[in-house]
Each structure stands twice: as C-alpha cells, then as structure tokens.
Amino acid sequence: MYQVNFLPWRQRRDRRRDYFWLGVLMLQVTALLLALFLVAGQLRHQQALRQARLAMLGEELAALTLLARQQQQERAQRALHRARAERQASNAQHNRRYFHLLQQLSSSIPPPLWLTALESDAVNGLRLRGLSRSPAAITQFERRLAGMPALPRLRLAEVAQRDDGLYTFHLAAQWGRDG
Image (cartoon, rainbow, N blue to C red; front, side, top):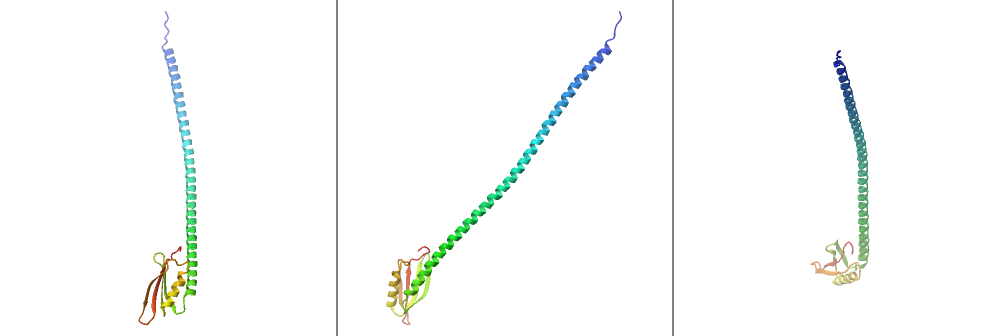
C-alpha cells in the first residue's frame, strides 16, 4: 500500500495552530496594554483635574485668608477708634468737670485767701493748699466748698500759722475721673 507522509501537513497544521494562539496571545497582550494605557491616561487626567482643583482651592483659601485678615484688621481698627472715641469722651467729660470745678473755686475764694496748689489724682482725690491772712477766710472757704456737690467728703486736713503771720491750709476732698 501506498503510504502518505502526513508529517508536513501536521507540521503546517501545528504551525497554524501555534500562529493562531500566538495571535490570540498578542491580541490579549495588546488589549491588556491598551487597557493599561487607558487606565494610566484616565489616572493622569484625574490627577490633572485634582491638581487644578487643588490650585483653585489654594487660590480660594488665599483670597479668603486675605479677606479674613482684612476684616480682622478692620474690626481691630474699629475697636481702636471706638476705644479712642470713648477715651476722648471720658477725657472731655473729666475736663468739663474740672473746668466747672475751677469756675466754682474761683467764685468761692474769699479776698484774703490764695490758693498755692491744686493737686488731683484718682487715688488721693483733690488736695487744695493755700495761704490766708485770717482763719475766718479759711473757714468761710471750707463752708463754700462743702456746699458744692462736686466735692463730696470735703475735710480740712491741716491749718498752721507761719512765722510771717500767714496761715497755711490743706483741704482734701474725694475727686476722681468719674466723680
């Protein structure tokens, strides 16, 4: 019988099958690489979006920080102006009280009496020192000042006669910034 050599045919068939599976493998590797490139591209795109969003949020944060700092400075300026205005109003009120007291003092001083010192502070109150030719003028001056509502708790602290015959006196009264 005639024998047919199937070896070349089998080799071709095996080669075709090998090429087919190699093609399938190449197609799968290509599909896998394509999928990896797509995923990498998507990740790069998302990263770029995140960086853009982060940059925008950073700018927003900087703008809001600047705005908050400006508002804080404005509040501090307003508080400073308010405190200055309150201090000026308090000083003006104190100055008006002091001016009114000086006007009352000038009209209350009897002729033979001179004021030599007027000291005022919040701790010790008001202290008046002066000279007089007669103790009656000092008493008259003390009575006039005692009738003033601006000088509560007025007291004659000291009266002494000097060698030249003049009397020195020291009056003390409650007096502060607020009354």
